Image 1 (cartoon, one colour):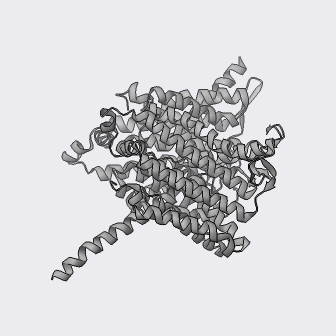
Image 2 (cartoon, chains in turn purple, brown; image 1 turned 90 degrees about the vertical axis):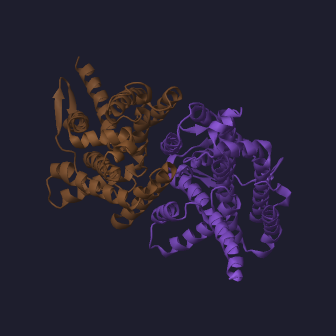
Image 3 (cartoon, chains in turn green, brown; image 1 turned 45 degrees about the vertical axis):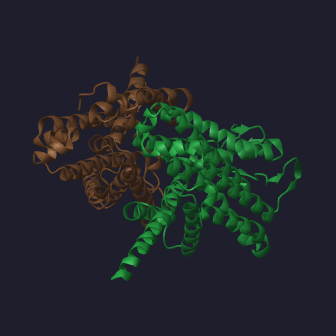
Amino acid sequence: METSLHRDAGFWVMIAIGLALLVAGPLVWDLFQIMQITQYVVLSVYVLSLSYIWGFGGILSFGQAAFFGLGAYTFSVASINMGETTFPFLLAFGLPALFGAALGYFMFYGKLSDVYMGVVTMVVTLIFWKLINHTAGPEYAIGDARLGGFNGIPSVPVLNVPGKPEAWLDPGQMFQVFMAILVILYIVLRTLIASDFGRVSLGIRENETRAALLGYDVRRHKVIVFAIGAGIAGMAGGMWATYQTFVDPNVFSLEMSAKALIWTMAGGVGTLAGPIIAVVVLQYLSLKLGEMHVLNNNFILGGIMMVLVLLVPKGGLPTLRDALVALKARTPAALQR
Amino acid sequence: MDYTVIVILEILRAISWLVILAAGLAIIFGMMKVINFAHGEFLMLGGYITIMSHNAGVPLWISIAVLAPLTVGLFGILVERLVIRHLYGRIIDSLLATWGLSLLMIGGVTMVFGNTVQGVSTPLGSIAIGAYQVPGYNLLLIVVAALLMAAIWALLRYTSAGLIARATMQNPDMAETLGVRTSWVYMATFGLGSAVTGLAGGLLAPLTGVAPSMGVNFVAQSFITVITGGASMIAGTLSAGTLLGTISQGVTFATGPVWGDAALLLAALVLLRVLPQGITGRIFRKSL
């Protein structure tokens, strides 16, 4: 933890991989592959929102889909009304972040325990899902955008060049923009984690009472971390809506929240690279398993989740790292004998 | 006059409904301080058992009152032995594991029975009060809620098993020192809580029918009731059920059922801001 960021090889490797994909991707892949990989990029942004607040702030949210969905609907409604996408995209970050701050106020200033927080965040998602499912009638419209209930909102605009509403991005360009967002987000989060603010977060994660006794305002700090996570999840929701050009209540589903948890656990709590790898691997696997039509998708997700909690509680990347360290430690001893 | 009676009955029904839904969850939470995130799917399981055994020729009341609690209770014990037992003291992990179980059960039941709604007709017809008709099933729910609370209270207060359970709740280490095998107490509690949830699922089946993902519609209310109530099984469930049932029924009268749940959550958030450990964290602390 004490090595500074610019000396961390993993940090530069991740950025290099990201930039290489950004440049080479559209040249190498066909349209279908680009669409597929763009999906992984969007979901990676989404999973980072949880990996950050859980791994580096000690805040476990069971309702990250509430912010993801809020961002998706905010972007859709705003862009349909405005006829352009730049400001709506910013709004997809801002509104969920504000909502996260408000919810965080009640949870952290109320000093709710972990169980209570888990329940509250999950219930918030459930209620969003219920409410949005009940907006089928024509009376539920915000400006020109009809919410459409369980049918969702069709024809969400594709991202356009800022200031030029007619200049829509093609799939290759959209992939490059999203990849750039992911790389920038990774750099910003790593910098934030290494900053003074991030160190206080880690301190709070390790021991809340001690951090409070040292004079840090734990409650305010947690609200800020939670709101940042909410904003990132909302931005991912906006990206999801414009990527699909369609949004429906499933963005608020419990499955969506569960997936963020599963990816973070699989990759390892306390890393950012691990969850991104987990998104790619697990989404690919579930796509392949889904094609076989043998096992239900929920069944697979639930099974993975239970296996992770019971057998690999530390997560993929840290377990792998520990195994490597143990292997290194054992080798010289073996040589001595 | 008749209208007043109807309104009061409706509010009582809303309260009883929350009490029945949340009682099983509250038993587990009161003992282990853990929320069973698969609660909705335990309800679903109770519902399926009821409908299936009824279709197989078992009288409906026996399916609801005996078979559903028994099966779901046994299933709960199995889950406790295979999963929960390994996660004592790791509260977050047990939440995650039970959520995984919830998804697993939804998926499993969908694979077996398909994603369709099955049901039986609601028994008991309706009863006339003045110019109004009240479904007899609603009155049954009120009676069941009262009996359920009374039975749990009597069990905790007057039996030796209840004494052991209360001791384990207050101080598990001391109870263990005095020769109580706390791990068995936890197993029995989880089984009992699951059985009560199975009963709730059985009662639910004639009202709403059963489908693999039906649990989602009821967990929000159950969770809010339990966390608002706090750690006392009976006082917590009753006080939270009364408060929230009245609020949700009032909002439903005013705006329709969609906003009822949202109003519940808002009320719970404001309440938890003041009483972070639920109602029984500060008031009625010594009660069961």
